[in-house]
Length: 387
Image 1: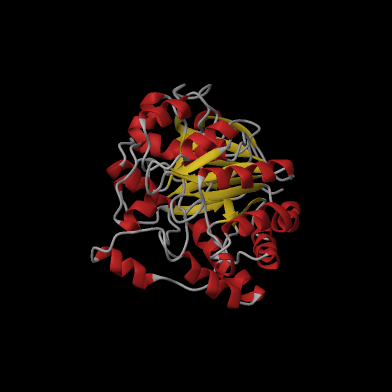
Image 2: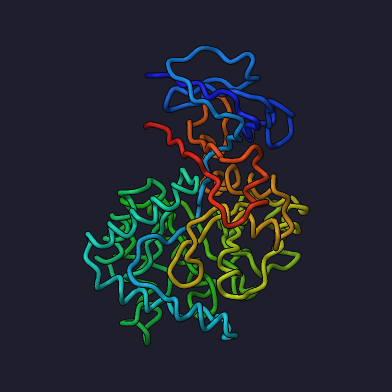
């Protein structure tokens, strides 16, 4: 395979504590990196850079690991900008609106869904995202959810079955019947195409007991576990995620001291989604509180049509720094290595020797510019490893 050396990097962030400044960021100044298209082969001072088949001149720019967006809802049709306008005018967010997207998505052709999903993936890639988790959840029928899982699988290996998004309208008077459908025929139809299962454990969606039933069925089907939890209140989702050993519990807007302590003592990642708070005028979760307690924190876009139509991880980083108490470095780590932890992967989110060669060349001399210059896409080029 052709090797490539990236020279004249002003600041290389590896997230490998064994190199560079030997902090958690593993940062090297005046650096170089060698990759072979699939993996990182070498990092070190630019003056010691070995020869390679090709050379990329970073020209004094920073290089960071590719962003890991561990929570998205990319496969959908329609839009809900009127809801955003209403919230900006003072209407509170109550978790409703999902069924509007369900109706629009059911009416879309598979080719239409493919086209819109790929367009959103392209937007994420242009912003430096190299690994994307994608959920189903906008059809809520056996065949429909299987269709969404299939479309998601065409753009990523990190596919999440989210039949437990809300109760399907056909089951409005039979919640128990819908939970049985999700645990049974729907899970059977989707498990082979998915890696994960998720549940929206919240008022207006699924109770703790209902979510537990769905996730336990998912585990029996060989799927990893994820959970939407504590977005609208202290509703027990975080505790359930920790109890079941879920890889991630996402939102964590309202958490008790007991929740924070439980997360800190577990392997469950707290994935924070500040785009949702921005778009719903909700309180931002305190990432600082979680980090100081010892919890692992990730950042993700939560790209969806109702509450976070966001495809910019740079914007997410800026929100996390401004509104959630993170330093620019902590936000960058959460959007790279933190996301990798949320997906239970060690080959991404870092640029250690042997890691996947997923990285981003910034149009800036330091990674701090990602938060320092909000609203500007500072990604000069996104490099994706070849499988």
